[in-house]
Amino acid sequence: MTEQEVSVKVITEVRRDVGSFRITCFSDITHWGDTNPSIFKSQVPQERMTIDNVNVKEGELALSYKGGSGGQLEEGDLIISPAENDDPNNYSIQEDRLIYER
Image (cartoon, rainbow, N blue to C red):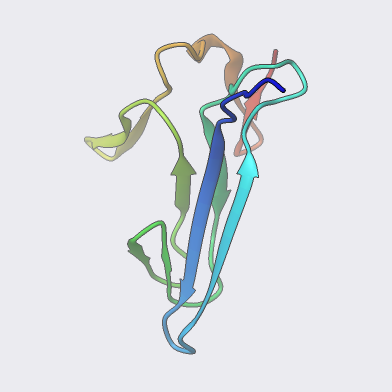
């Protein structure tokens, strides 16, 4: 029997007003056999939540990611830095949506 290390992503969501929580764990290897894109989920909660240990208000944009340095705000612009092995040229914005093309 051979062993293989599997890379996974985990998202934790805590509904603060209700006190319930959800933990989602899934393999982040794509059908191409890699873990790109490194930026993998965005959501706008309809209520106050804690997502991946970050308090998020209703209506705020929450980005969950694995790898890279994440993002930073520069003069009102959100600058997202993907992981080192993730090609930033594969990302684009189309009608206010972040698109990843291979």
